[in-house]
Length: 151
Image (cartoon, rainbow, N blue to C red):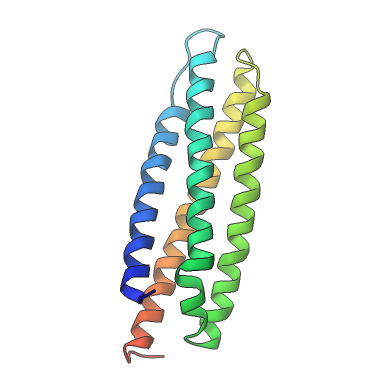
């Protein structure tokens, strides 16, 4: 795949994931009146499942059809950075699965546990955003080297 196509697809997929992440922020911030969190829990479960599926899709695209193979071929120091980012992918997959499973087991009346899972989810979103910034920097460095920029 041409590097411009890879960059464009990666950007589109990141944008889509960003929208789902915004939906998670909105749903986790939902204040529940009383002790029945059934509607919030249902929404958070639904959006989190969508988030997990899209996250796994994006990570697989990056690893197998996307930038990781391309960047690894540019320079040894970029290959090491790619290995670190790939390890973070594994961590994100594990944490997203754990959160989805935890949400599935929650009771609609356990507001404290729901708040804790929502807090975990927000931490994961922050980690993914930091990771995405590192990926963008890596891509920019890779492309600048490929086009004859500084090494």
